[in-house]
Length: 206
Length: 206
DNA sequence: CGGTGCTTGTGAAATCGTTCACAATCTAGA
DNA sequence: TCTAGATTGTGAACGATTTCACAAGCACCG
Ligand SMILES: NC(=O)c1ccc[n+]([C@@H]2O[C@H](COP(=O)([O-])OP(=O)(O)OC[C@H]3O[C@@H](n4cnc5c(N)ncnc54)[C@H](O)[C@@H]3O)[C@@H](O)[C@H]2O)c1
Ligand SMILES: NC(=O)c1ccc[n+]([C@@H]2O[C@H](COP(=O)([O-])OP(=O)(O)OC[C@H]3O[C@@H](n4cnc5c(N)ncnc54)[C@H](O)[C@@H]3O)[C@@H](O)[C@H]2O)c1
Image (cartoon, each protein chain N blue to C red):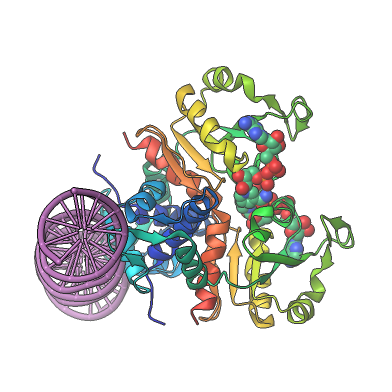
């Protein structure tokens, strides 16, 4: 499979959301122009994005909402359930554990870990907070391939390395520390202070 | 002020964090190569990024950590305190309210709002949850220019429009809904499901 | 004071991503 | 079957960002 540009993948996620809305609304086809309007882009961009993966539309008509939804789900690997572990049962970790938006999309949180003995054993939604000492064993046993990293930044590198060794190949990182990990582990960062600083810059550069 | 590329601004935030670490560690100068290694980029990229704003370095030596820190803080608008309001005192909103990483950077949370009468009036860290009905008046009174939007996605557009009308010019949006707002309001999205889908794609693409 | 080693600042080249523009193709209707 | 109208798929142009490559500047040393 050839390499797909990062921005294209992000837009596919957006298209998918709108397609689902359109399908729920009973629309059986949709044009690149309509998708573009929903997603804040252009029709040419939509068609180009899709063209990397094949020809899904019908000239003169547009795309079948149902078929295109299925295609994009497959491209994004959403045609299956992913097992997710959360490390750090603090404010962010707890919020993520109870976030229905994940389960809805096939991301099943199968375990949440913490290092604090007072937190370990406590219930959190339908999970019990596990001891991070069992991280590697549990990750393997539960076949988790994605992890959400929600530990303090100075703990992030250590925990991330353990996750990688245990077989996790994708990490959503809420910490602000830079992570050094093996090539085959994909990391996405949710860097809140960085985004606020981008906002600050936009306001300051008026 | 001339327009600066989005990726450049993001990298400046990263450089700033490393510069602060280097300064704390007692280093008085730093080269573009060292900065690049910390930030996972190249020395040419670092120099190009900085060159948009002026010449801050000394050939043969590098950059003064102290001076460059000050310059970047100014470029990013971090040489002042920003008043931030949070709308939605649920899981994400509460987590953000207690997040020290914000205050540390000069982002002071001055109010948090909710629509649920059971939540209004409750204490949250050193704040009291306010009624979202008073949003406009409070935003104006508190001179808030940045808002964190942490309400359910189907409420996001309505609340965002009210924030914009009340004078907020920058929004950090945790919802997954697309927002339509006046041109002069800058929005940054923290779209968790989208990032997980990008991870899913990376795992599926093999 | 001139040589050596290091590092910046920056045009130019290369790469990457978006937009344009249009032939090809489809449906519907006469 | 033929025409009109709509919309896709895609090479090519364009624009933006990154990387390259090197002259110029600075500190240190003998
Ligand atoms: N609170 C927020 O709104 C927010 C927003 C964005 C990013 N973040 C980042 O997310 C991370 C967590 O923030 P938080 O506010 O949830 O902090 P928190 O202190 O509420 O939670 C951190 C949790 O991690 C646990 N922990 C510490 N070391 C651990 C280890 N080695 N293994 C497993 N668990 C460990 C702690 O016991 C604690 O429960 C931080 O890096 C922070 O910068 C927080
Ligand atoms: N929980 C997570 O980990 C998480 C992660 C990323 C994004 N999000 C998104 O963040 C948003 C909030 O998620 P959450 O999990 O915190 O939900 P939540 O239900 O815990 O909190 C939402 C809060 O908003 C309040 N609210 C509802 N309508 C309001 C209005 N019009 N004005 C003011 N307050 C209002 C509710 O009373 C509630 O307290 C959602 O859009 C969600 O998709 C959540």
